[in-house]
Length: 162
Image 1 (cartoon, helix red, strand yellow):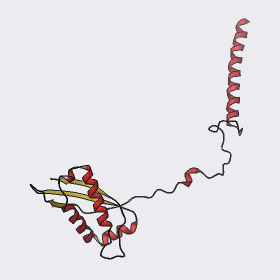
Image 2: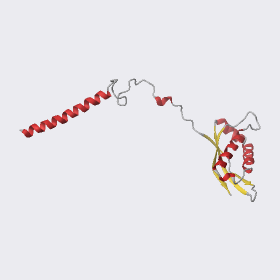
Image 3: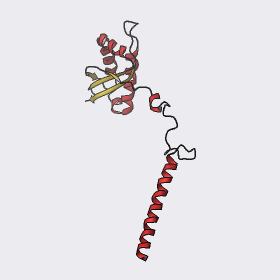
Image 4: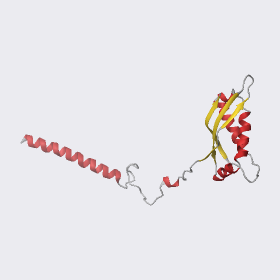
């Protein structure tokens, strides 16, 4: 008999523990203001979701220019620069303008690229300065003052100095 009593007590202890855990869970999940906010149910299921307030992601717009190969005139010897350039555009109208005015855009880019000092281009600071100079020059009004480019960034996809 004592064996039976000890088993009942063990079962009773586990049963009480299970009932206690169930009661605590029900209390935490209820609409009780003292309940943990992480575990409680939402107060208003019709409230707008915070994720819907986020503006839609705008797909980036790029235009790639044909590769450039220019001669860099140095003090002791001449070098060659080969560069592939992509432009990150701020609006779709700029992409159309690039297609319409490609010869003028390439001419501006070539004149800037060919004036560079080969020693400056070896440094990351020289790359950034060249990209900014190209961005400013290509953003200037074109031969048609009603057409302009809104260039957000100039990106080099290939850059070799020999």
